[in-house]
Image (cartoon, rainbow, N blue to C red; front, top):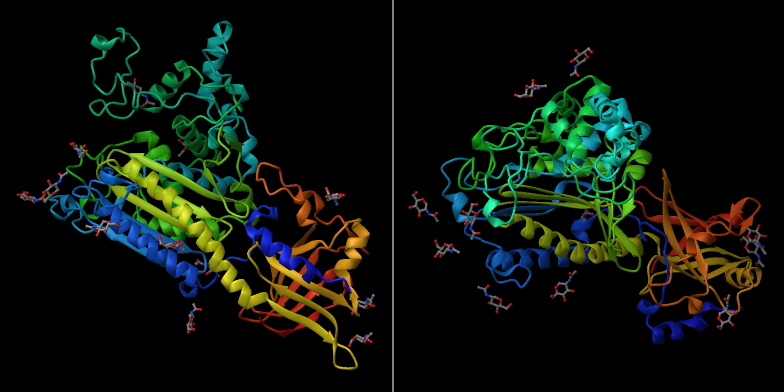
Length: 572
Ligand SMILES: *[C@@H]1O[C@H](CO)[C@@H](O)[C@H](O)[C@H]1NC(C)=O
Ligand SMILES: *[C@@H]1O[C@H](CO)[C@@H](O)[C@H](O)[C@H]1NC(C)=O
Ligand SMILES: *[C@@H]1O[C@H](CO)[C@@H](O)[C@H](O)[C@H]1NC(C)=O
Ligand SMILES: *[C@@H]1O[C@H](CO)[C@@H](O)[C@H](O)[C@H]1NC(C)=O
Ligand SMILES: *[C@@H]1O[C@H](CO)[C@@H](O)[C@H](O)[C@H]1NC(C)=O
Ligand SMILES: *[C@@H]1O[C@H](CO)[C@@H](O)[C@H](O)[C@H]1NC(C)=O
Ligand SMILES: *[C@@H]1O[C@H](CO)[C@@H](O)[C@H](O)[C@H]1NC(C)=O
Ligand SMILES: *[C@@H]1O[C@H](CO)[C@@H](O)[C@H](O)[C@H]1NC(C)=O
Ligand SMILES: *[C@@H]1O[C@H](CO)[C@@H](O)[C@H](O)[C@H]1NC(C)=O
Ligand SMILES: *[C@@H]1O[C@H](CO)[C@@H](O)[C@H](O)[C@H]1NC(C)=O
Ligand SMILES: *[C@@H]1O[C@H](CO)[C@@H](O)[C@H](O)[C@H]1NC(C)=O
Ligand SMILES: *[C@@H]1O[C@H](CO)[C@@H](O)[C@H](O)[C@H]1NC(C)=O
């Protein structure tokens, strides 16, 4: 019998991490269910806690003096879809806030912050809840008729460099930052900031926005759309992502038109009531609920964002943000299929590790594979927020800060959290998978010796490893080697497919000759080409199905092409 054992010394010498296993997109183990008991998660929690302490005491190379602990307060939670309680909490109240005369004097999970552009995420969620995702292929002019009218008015003066062709823009491109429209109108314009730059090289101009200043207040719909129509496009539609608040203000106009409801009604009907949120609003709640650094004007606590609220004006507590994030990952408000479709990139950026969705900001963390973390950041005045979701682990985190330099604080913390958490969550998932799935599955022959068996183990590589696979004393791995024309024993590793039903968890095998795989991550993985490529009587040779008990622990394993279930006879 040809045994895969002969390859083990080679693996050890080569070092498992240098092998390019090329797992599929997605999880390499089922999501961890009992994080609080996983040692990898305990360790990372401890490390994260120490890192946060160091940052706040100004003793971390991560942020140094960028973290102004006299003024900047922080709220952090890590949460999972298998637990309604937070997995990790951390709050810091700055002396400025402890001493505040308006707003809270102690930060906790109920403290209300402004979440800035995280509002965009909940605006898209509202649209998906109301109308599903098919409507995203509608042209925006169907729902915001002023844009069609204005395009007609431009008529012969239309010039692609100066005007966006609105008839080409779909709702999907608004939602995924691909429309090519200007970033904003009036808000943030150097002229509306009240600076006189005519002495600093800029000319006197007549295009002074009549709105969008603290004094004049938010632009109304007419003013905003007129301004946006005069603004030059950044790129042709569907060319490259360019961050724009205008996309979401216009998307919200479309949402109101297609539902004939106000944004606030939808917010309350679709999110606040079903999830029992206490503080998600588009206008400022009573001061006593919020953290208000310095005062309500300086911090932008009181800034009325008007029709721009769906793009960046919402208020929420940490608890609300966590409930929303958990509802997304747990498909509470959308079907699982629509959630998966939503949580996909719409486009790359110019960087290999950053992509853009609708309106996800997606960061790819390299581990044994590319792990995509779906995030949405937000900044407004003295406030910054981060919502981060890892679909591979069913885990997310929320960071909110108020004070000085919060954008840098939240961005840096997010990067550090992702880099610490992702490997730890893989390790936690593996700890649970070892208990749930590894061991020997076998039928015994008449002489009471196993004549059909499969051994499942783990090693330094991703997924579960099939070490031995014998059916009626025939070495199945040798059979596969002969069938595929491989010249040496192939590696057989199992990865979860995400297909589960009561009492059953499905996995798929990658069967490959590892020594021929390049160890360079620059070489594209082609394992996904091989899925289901060998079929026996309409069942893939790579299909494996674990039968599990009420706790989720495997009691049997079926290599499905063989139409047999082998009972689990020993654990590792
Ligand atoms: C964690 O482990 C303890 C001790 O083994 C056990 O009693 C408890 O049920 C476990 N908790 C979870 C959530 O699995
Ligand atoms: C925790 O920090 C220690 C010391 O910096 C490091 O060796 C270890 O790998 C970290 N563990 C995790 C899970 O982040
Ligand atoms: C700052 O960090 C250094 C090195 O990690 C440590 O020795 C020192 O005690 C820390 N100081 C404070 C105030 O935490
Ligand atoms: C922070 O507050 C402490 C104590 O009130 C003070 O000594 C220190 O100068 C302050 N630091 C800054 C950067 O304002
Ligand atoms: C996630 O959804 C499942 C099924 O809909 C539900 O049983 C579970 O309680 C939810 N988990 C959380 C943490 O809300
Ligand atoms: C707290 O407020 C008091 C009174 O306004 C002021 O004297 C004191 O300096 C403040 N302390 C801090 C840390 O801001
Ligand atoms: C917007 O404001 C302008 C200037 O105040 C006003 O003329 C116009 O009627 C307003 N439009 C809407 C829709 O309120
Ligand atoms: C709903 O439709 C009616 C009739 O067209 C319109 O008057 C009203 O403003 C619409 N309401 C909203 C919230 O869009
Ligand atoms: C913090 O922000 C306040 C309000 O914007 C500003 O007045 C102050 O100079 C800032 N302090 C630091 C250290 O950046
Ligand atoms: C292997 O075991 C099966 C099930 O117990 C039995 O039917 C079969 O005859 C055995 N084959 C050999 C070669 O022992
Ligand atoms: C493999 O196992 C199945 C199911 O136990 C059995 O029917 C089949 O004959 C076996 N194959 C060989 C080559 O013995
Ligand atoms: C693996 O690499 C060896 C040496 O380059 C080559 O001879 C062999 O054909 C390759 N096998 C496959 C399946 O590509």
